[in-house]
Amino acid sequence: MFKRNSYRKLTAGEIALAQSVYQNSLDYDKIRIHHGRLIPFFQHAKTAMSPFGTMHFPEQTYVDDFSSADVSKQHFFIHEMAHVWQYQLGLRLWLDGIILTAKGGYKANQCYAYEKWSANCEQFNQFNMEQQADLIADWFIFKHTQNNQKIQNIMREFIENPNNVDLLPKHAEFRFQAA
Image 1: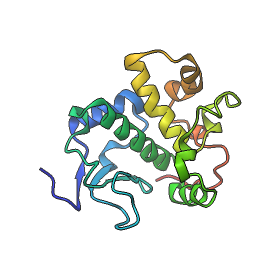
Image 2: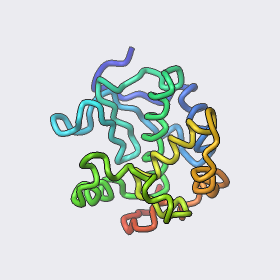
Image 3: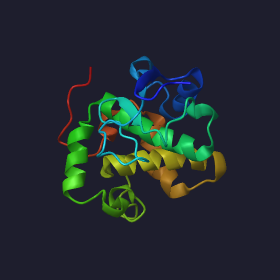
Image 4: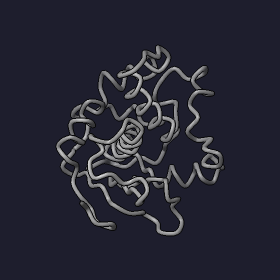
């Protein structure tokens, strides 16, 4: 339906799906989905990127309406929407992403592995941007399938108030004043 390398607004179903997680913490009218890569030749064919509040889904991962897609694609959408949430609250994702890359975090997907840190981290803002996105997406799945009390405890403040800028990663000194 949507041509490659084109932008589109969220569908009504995608807004409803995102609101089930992010409530009113996002300006849904500003969000765009790009059917194509952000960085051609550099961005992996199965990796979405959302550093500036727009989600860029390569051909292999793009869906015309994520709300009617299977649960794994909805998980992916909620993960990317977390980066939009972080961006809209003031996190400079592009800089955080560069730092995670420089530290080798994207090798073998180490930067996503919140499970090994969750024993020592009790608050949502103790996790990096990718761990937060995975926590949110996993919580989205768990709330529909099973109850994981550890994730529920970590997510408590987010669930209560996703508008809270203090939920952004603590280590992130790269915040800007969101518009």
